[in-house]
Length: 42
Image (cartoon, rainbow, N blue to C red; front, side, top):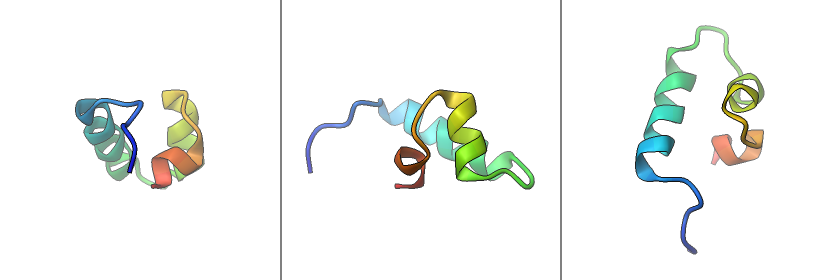
């Protein structure tokens, strides 16, 4: 795969935020972070 636009730290923090958000969806967490929901999903 190609290089990532986001740092490893950002990606880890985004996943942690998603997991820590009760009832949160990919779309809602991604919107808070300013990224596309498909980016967060993958």
